[in-house]
Amino acid sequence: MFDDFTTLLKIKRYSPNTIKTYTGLLIAFQNFIGDLIPIHQAESSFLRKKFVEKNLSQNLAYTTQKQLASALRLYLSLVHNRELDLTTVAPRRPQKVLPDILSIEEVKDILAAITNEKHRTAILTIYALGLRSGELLNLKIEHIDGKRDQVKILCSKGKKDRILPLPHDLKIFLRTYYKKFLPKTYLIENAQQEQYSASSLRAVFKKATQRAGIYKNVTLHSLRHSHATHLLDEGVNIKTIQQLLGHNDIKTTLIYTHITTNQLVKLPNLVGLVS
Picture 1 (cartoon, rainbow, N blue to C red):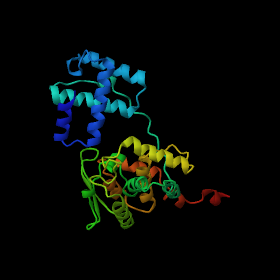
Picture 2: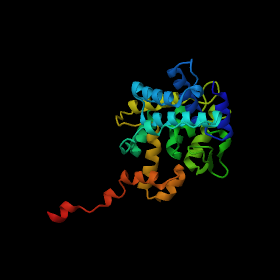
Picture 3: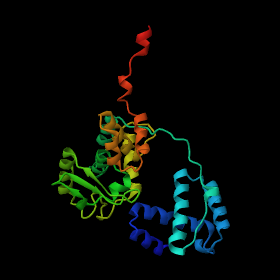
Picture 4: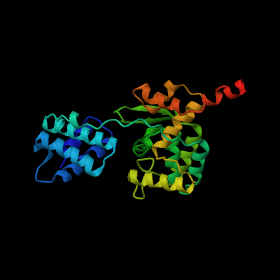
């Protein structure tokens, strides 16, 4: 139904994860409004009305609302040369909440709770490189350069490529993993040597946190947050962390300055001064 849209996104080098997300949201929205009226033939007022109805009836999260709006606008613009104005029904940005951060000991406990070597490799690589889960799933063997100790992350969020340093200990770990599992294309593959699914990876992390006795509100993305915070705790420059994470805006990276304990522990004991 949306094959032309998918093809255009590939040509424009959108990430596989974005293409999959946008296409899935369009299919779900088409199902919501019914097959009698194709999205591209519906009046803008009708699409806005159904956009609101879907958000309210299904209580969509802010991020999902934003993605759906982007998918609708991009689809109509690229494939049908048509503009769709959703500004009047755009979701309001929620209050910024500081993410829960895993301590180094908690990361160790999570890894220790995973008995499957492939699963442990996936979780360790996300944490060690500060990857988004989609970046890990799209990481191919050819993108890992052991001779130059580099990892190439292609077409990540914002359609940017970036180069990450490959830590020595992770390289040793990955070599052992590769010799045992012999992945064909992607670093992490399923039993059929196909790309591993996002839902399966989320299930692995959730089960590991439960086994490790961790009850914080954490997800796979928390490993990326923890990676950045731990680097900051160790004194790595915020600008360097911005480049490693692939953030366009330094403001996005600066959130970690509100989380790190590095500066907090250096504060003077004011109670001792006055008592």
